[in-house]
Amino acid sequence: ASASPVTRRKKPSQWPYHAVSAGVLLAVVAGVFLYNRNGGGRRAAEADERVLGSQTPSDRATTTRRTSEQRQPQPQARKKTTRPSGLGLGSDGKFADVLSEIESAKDNAAGTPKGSPAAPGTFQPLGGRPYSKAKKLTADDWPADLKPVAEFPSSLKTRFDCSNGWGWFDAKEDRLTVKTIKRNSSRWVKDPEFVFAAQSAVSLRTSIVNSTHESRVGFSISGIRVGLRPRDGAVQVYLRDRGKNVAEEVIHTIKSKSPLRLVLYREPSDAQKLCWIVGEVKEDGVIFGGEITIDDFPEKPAFSWYVTAPRKPPSKPFWIANLMLRD
Image 1 (cartoon, rainbow, N blue to C red):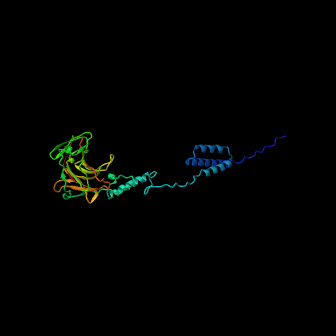
Image 2: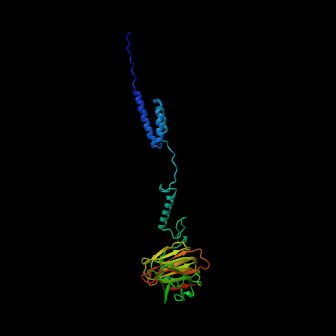
Image 3: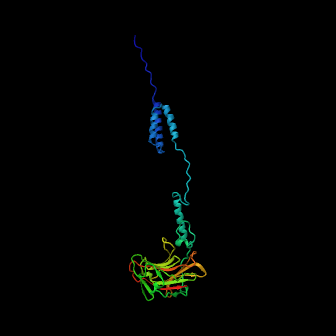
């Protein structure tokens, strides 16, 4: 018998499967790309590829669709943040504090009265004590009735007490010339007999403008200092509050190369006001003055005058003369 012809069955076209595979592949690539962009990482992408490799094309399409939906970035609630006024900068309010200090400095520059209440934590000159701005005066404003100290300068030790002895100056006629001292150059001269009462006044003259920058001369009333220091051909008037670790606060600069007179006095009508005057003792001399409010004066304020000697020889002698008091 002859063999019957074999009829070959035509295989169905493979293009639908190729299309599905290509779509799945593109979806996987897109999903992996999106997942890695949103912080998913490579491990999760590799795990998805292993799962997809063991599934049928239809299952793969379903899995890919679910995975893509799960990986879509979800909208997140915006965290409420507190920003400093004016600018969205800073961290934990620190920048806001800086802005507050800047605004405070602007207020002071705009003419905030000296000694007005300051914000907590800000620098307060002279411990926050109010003091006036220096104003120009005339020779008529010098206080009257001051009397020379008889023991000055040749017999200081008979009346005054001095720290570190008396070998820091040379006395001649009506003045004492301060010597050069390299170490421990400050000297305090206390007057046990004198009480700085409500009507009291003290005065001296000095050539400190000729001395070196570390030099000082001034008065201390109940621990509060008002003094002079030289700066580049001029003299600065400064205040310093009680205590050891406090800074000198410069309140005025007088551009004069002449000897200057420094006066402190208290107004009988206002015992809390400590007034100061600094100026040239000559006709039409430059004179300035001001006042400080001291609301904690003791009943009998202690008085002393102090000197800080130059560490190097000055260009001209640094002398002190005409120490006078008014009880």
